[in-house]
Length: 334
Image 1 (cartoon, helix red, strand yellow):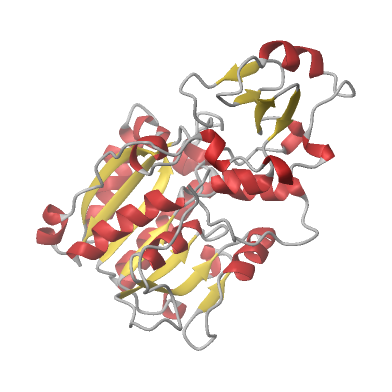
Image 2: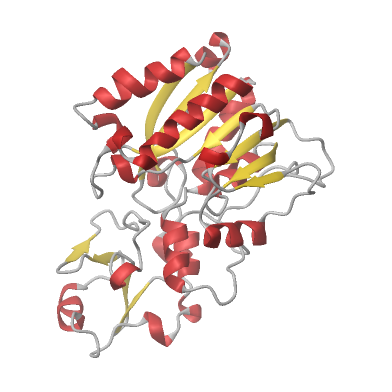
């Protein structure tokens, strides 16, 4: 089901004092923040360059100005303006390493942000960090980009590093086939040895649990007015799974879970998962995409924002319950 906080120590203004402080880099709409707040953390800095994502973020995350600051471009963020913190959290841009992208890696300007993360780690020396990216980072450039460049840079910054590829449907009880690379580092070698990534858990949440049919509007339904309608109608045969329209063909998810939500959902009308409901066919709503990322049911969507932007934001985010499980493992050893 949708994410529900497990602890009563969540951000600011709660009854208990936060266990640790963290900074939220490349924050998007705050999925990482939700997970780390659930593990008892308090966010002291948010950095996000996308103005629409910041609107959604600020609508859902309220912090006293004296305890929290915002930044836009990490290239303009001076280390002296970064407050002291215990954990650095960053879901940095994945396009340079994604199979769906050009895979330019660190040569891409977006790949250069990794060097900025290293700069902050060296200058502020937090006790730990969590980085998130596509699993393709591990195989990029015949595995040399990560094993011969990125991991040594993290180690040279003073950290003992562990990495794992985890799937939302096997590690978060969220029915989405979403594999992502998670990199964790600790300055204390003993804490690195103690840290363990969360184990697999049983998937009990179903697709139907997260669908909100009553909220779907006319614009979400496919009809004869769409050129691709005949092909989609012919190929969508089951109500038990979700599909994707990939510009020229329909892809069925054989695992009866949601296919990977992507940042280019809604761009040109493709990639948003499709479902068959009786005789009707429609795409997921932005709210449903949020639920398939484990966001809370009451997560606010900005009024008047284009749905294409909302699809992008959820596809570009993280699966919140999975982040919460990793954050609790980090908190456990700090």
